[in-house]
Length: 250
Ligand code: PEP
Image 1 (tube, rainbow, N blue to C red):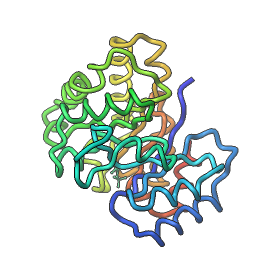
Image 2 (image 1 turned 180 degrees about the vertical axis):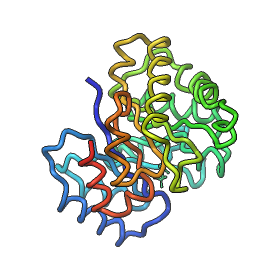
Image 3 (image 1 turned 90 degrees about the vertical axis):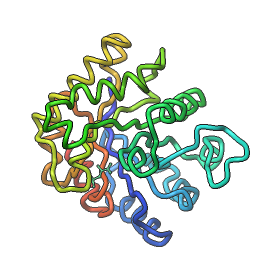
């Protein structure tokens, strides 16, 4: 059975006090009995405090990036071992903002993916098309191409350690959301691709989450779709109430 997941990506939006307050507020209203993997992704400087605050809480703490090397002369970079040493549970890779603003191409993402999985570090891997791709009806080809050049280069995947996040770039931070039908259509397509590459069992057990302007009032209809296993939430994850309402929508 694949997991239901809701992950909040805080991006570069909160300082230490705000990050602490967010976690404390989420903890206050979070119902531990809900069968959802709840994740938050604070910025690097606050990860240690975040994992300490989330200890025993069933809230996973993710990094927003990681280097593709394990150690060495890479000024300003952060390794998997560093993150694991402060109990970080995994990492978001392939986010369109990293692809676009920091030139993270498929080759680099494949290296990051490989080193993460090899070191048993869970990856939430983002793919998704631009508005131009969508308007030209190229979105299926685009996500297939992204997967072919990254995830599908890996021979064995473990659904416990890899989540796919479908995030149409035109819906990120724009207030535009894919309709539930659009989300289902492409999630199903991605699941079929996973099945062709790794077999039905792996495909059925891999969580595919949706990201792109999900809000409390749109979450339920999207999450209801058969192949949508939750969400990657940007803006709305900065409000504890909105975030938990989205978690409850599953
Ligand atoms: C994201 O950046 O992953 C995201 C989904 O952002 P938003 O919810 O703000 O569109």
